[in-house]
Image (cartoon, rainbow, N blue to C red; front, top):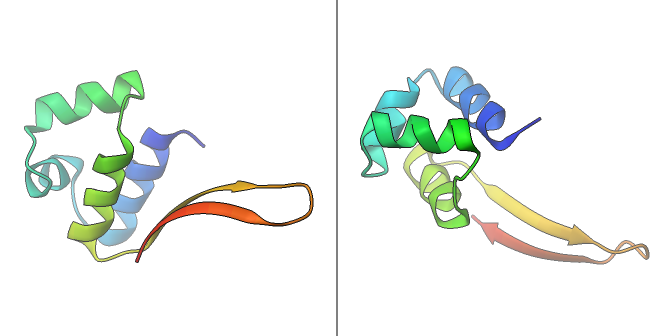
Amino acid sequence: MTTAEMIKELCEQMNISVSELARRIGQTPQNFNKKLKRETVTLDELKAIADVLDVKYEQAFILSDGNEIKISNE
């Protein structure tokens, strides 16, 4: 699943439009939709999405021994 697909699915489950999400993170819907199409959403934007929707966001490297190095937004 791409980042754009994940964001669209999150919007569906949170009952919010992608345009409304864009406004909540301080972007125009047009600009945010272009980022989704190009798959250029930044880590800071993903954290902002988690913050405004009050959800947890994690990004991690998982090593072969099971150890994780992760960025978490709780």
